[in-house]
Every structure is written in C-alpha cells, then in structure tokens.
Length: 138
Length: 326
Image 1 (cartoon, helix red, strand yellow):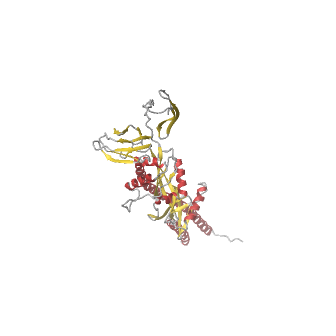
Image 2: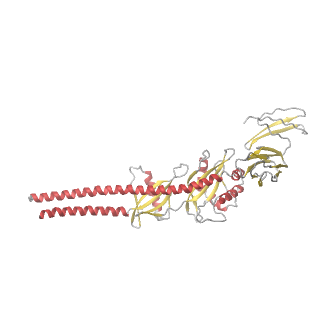
Image 3: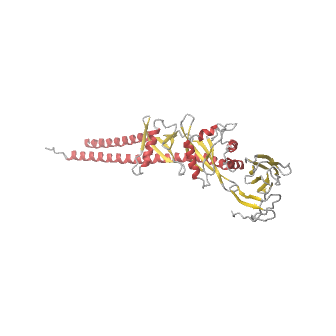
C-alpha cells in the first residue's frame, strides 16, 4: 500500500489472511501509518522516502482502517479475508472472478463496498460453468 | 364665625401655599427624574458589566473552540472514535487525554497554575450518546455516573447531529462533596476528514469563573449566574441565593409592563437586582448573569436632593416672611 501524492494507493486493498503488506513512502515528506482496528492494531512510526519500508503481517480476518498521523485526510481500508477467492472490482464496478480448485456446491458470494455496506448472494458453482451475479448499484 | 383676614395675610397665605405647592411638585418631579436617571444609569452600568463579562468569556471560549476544532481533526482521534463504536473506548480516551495534555487543555505532567483546564472531557457517538469512559479513567467515570449530566449531554448530542458548528452552553456537575457546580461546555462535532461523515462529538466542560465582587467607581457589584433555579456566586450570600433565584424566576413569568423592579437588602444596604440571559442557544437551558448593585448612592443622592429642595422651600418661606417685616 503505497503513499503517493499524499494518498494511500489503493484506497481499499483486499488481502488473504496471513499476508504481509509493505507501506512504501513515495512522497518527499514524512508519513506515519497506523491503525487502531481490532483486526490489526499497528503503528509503523515516521519514515521518509528512501528509508527502510515498514511492513505488517495481517493474521486475522476483518476490516482494518488505516490512517496517517501527519496527514489527517489520508485514509485507507485493508480487507483481510479468510478465503483466497476474491477480486477487487474495476472502478466502474465490473469484476470477473475466476475460481480454480474449488469443489462444486453451494456458496455465498459477498461484496464489501464499505464499512456500512456489504452485499451477499447465494450461488451454486459447477465446474466449467459461468455465472453472472449483479449486485445493486449504491 | 370666620374671622376676616386682612388682605396682607391672605396674600401671605396664598404665597406660602404657592411656594409649598411648587416645592412639593418640584420635589416629586425631581425625585421621579432622579429615580429614572439612576435606573437608566444602573441599567447601563449592568449592561456594561454584562458585555465586559461576555466579551471576556468569549475570548476564553474562542480559544477552547479553536483547540477543540484542531483536536477533532486528528486522524488518531477520528480512527479511535470509530473503533469505540465497537465498545472499546480505552484507546479513544487514552489518545484524547494525550492530545488534550499536549494542547494544555487538561493538566499534564507540568501544571500551569494560571491555565484554565477542562474539568471533564467526554465523547458522544454518532447517535449523540455519551461513550462511557473505560475503568482506567475513574476521574471521568465520576462524571458519567451523574445521570443529570449524561442525560443532558445525550439530549444535546441528539440535537446537534445535523449541525456542523460548535455549541456552547451550561451544564451542572456534582462535586465529590455533592455540591452543584456550574460548567461551561463546548461541544465540537467530530467529522471524518475524508468522508465528511459525522463520527460523534467531543464535549469539554470548564468551570465558570467566579464573578464575585466588583467596584465600578462608587458602585458595588455582587454578581453570579442563575441557572436552573439556582444562583452560583461566592459574593452573593448563601442564604439569599435561593430566594433571589425564586424571585427572579417569578418576575420572569410576568409581562415586562407588570414586572416591578427587584431589590434586596444585604447587610442593611439596599441593592437593585439586575439580570440578563447569557446564552441564547435553545439546545441548552438558559443561564442568566445576575448582579446586585448597591443602591446606597441612589438613596444618598435622593436624600440630598430632598434636603436641598426643602431647604430652598424654607428659604423662600423665610424670604416671604422677611418681606412682610420690611
């Protein structure tokens, strides 16, 4: 999760549980990334471009709110997931999730929009089949 | 049989009556005018005092508002407030304490004896309800245990959910000894810097400064604040405060035209009672600045004027009699 032009990029990042995320600073200024979320509380301290890049391992599923102590407008979300089967949509909302090594059966497809909005829909998966699932627009 | 009066005697009596009549009328008009002048003078004096007090308080409050507005922009406070929604307020109050100490809004490791520190600080959630402090903050729990305070703050919190400005008003708290204490509160909304979403509010309570005694030239003031039927003042005698609150409360119910001027005796000294609303914000109960101004000078002046007019009258009568002897 890069800090560039005084923003986190991407603003929302989905990762699988156990992933390590690095926080490179590409601005000519200090940043101070931290979170108070119960999913993962961390504080990597102040650092500048060129200094050693801090990283954090996310070992619990949930949503992590991330902020910069110095630049109060900088906010981001890390969505830590229990499953390896996920995809971040395009800005337009389109997505294509290719599922491999997953047995046929009934599953739940969930879409995390923001902290207040999560959609879900039951789906039945069959090998080689394509499903089109549309969630309502915001 | 009525004795016949000489023309000179009749003239003398007529002149005497005229002098007494004119003197009486002059005395009455002068006293009325004098009374009106003093009433206006005291009223202006009180207005001046109220304005001076309000301006002084506004300066103090403006500083608190500025600091509070900066504090609620802190990303640490905003993120901790969002986390407190899940039920754990430890982080929030810990961070707020550190931030308030950094800004010298509450006592820190170094205490400045001249600084004005907040008596309490509490957070309201996005629904305007008080977020209970954790057990590690007994000094704040002592306030949230006061039901009157939390109920009042909850009401205010719910009223400001759609308003972006800062609110200033009064609340009462209880001291450890059970005494009621007046606090001026500043409520600042916490708005997510990125999304403009209302996350909650920060409430800061400050003790009201003692207005006490004051001397404006020859006029002695005893001032205090009337709030929810109670007068808060060190200068106004404790025994007088409940009656004063009651009398002002009763007077306020009367239409302005029917209301009489209020006076009170303190140590054999007649005092005029003046009051004026301090905070027009309807989301808080109204507080009134109350002043008792010694009327001794008025009475002295009235006595002096009366004396002078009566002296002039006697002089004229004596003059009339003297003329008779010539």
